[in-house]
Picture (cartoon, rainbow, N blue to C red):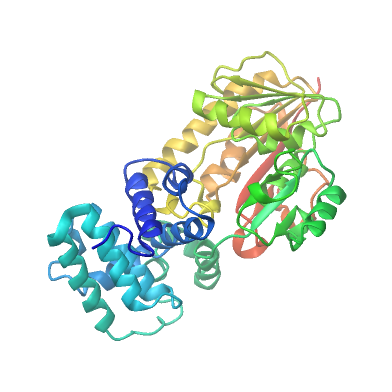
Length: 433
């Protein structure tokens, strides 16, 4: 097999993404590493292939098991990743001819393990192409398997939302998300004018929270180098609107990376002290705020349990969470979530709340957010905090549509209902004494 087989480069890059994520590298980091030397079309294909494998892994493994005598568990992980890439192209991408999908996947396998592995992959995929199409599954039958999600998580969602609504959520998670940008150093009208002049199509995002643009390469959009906009889902912009700190206030953003919320908050606040725990995350924070910030954002490396200041008019806690509201954007994340991780993250967030609450003076705000759909991380967390800290009370803002608020007044965004990422936010006022 020649090394310059057409189409091999993006397939091998996609395999590299799967390999790196399996070894603990975040999807976005693995993606950037793998596609750096590819042309734009190959970058898009590599991204689509890798993300598609994560979104459809359960069904791909089921299809492959029928073509492997001892099932997928008998196959080495590196080879199985190659087989999943081939199976995804054969079963999910009508535009790629079967012979091209098989040939390029065999090329990846040959680079991994030589002729023996290439022969095995070739035999499995060719058997897969001869299998009859079983057709669509009956509605509501085995949602976790048919939509490639962890069964324990789908069971929770079915109990909470019902099977039909859970099905819509799973479909959302398996769809490719739109690119949404938010004005930063440029006004919205300036940004719209520049996009129109460049011939880039756009439309308002849900709830008018940003602009959906018809491109996949934000660095090529007008205004990127100037910091005119940020790439950010409407959910995150709605969260910062809901927070609504007082003009000119001092805000402590305790878990700030990658920095989009800090940029939005600084458009209103006087000063934003933006912190995160690790040097890598602070580096991302600096990159974002340097490019698109207002000059009133001060990044620092600090643990939320050891705040670097004694008092702030508003404290923002966008805590690490299970991230179940962002599976569409992070297709690999669903395979890392566990009930144990849910319990650990819930307790960590409770510690962050307890550690930062003393920074809030009477009359100040404690602003809490997650990108999770799970009640333990959201409303139950807030109820627990208010029970233990009677000096705080909920104070919803009138800056977002009332349809997005729960009965208690918390911002609650569910992808299957709002057409955005999932998110939760609570606005807590310290009672003046």
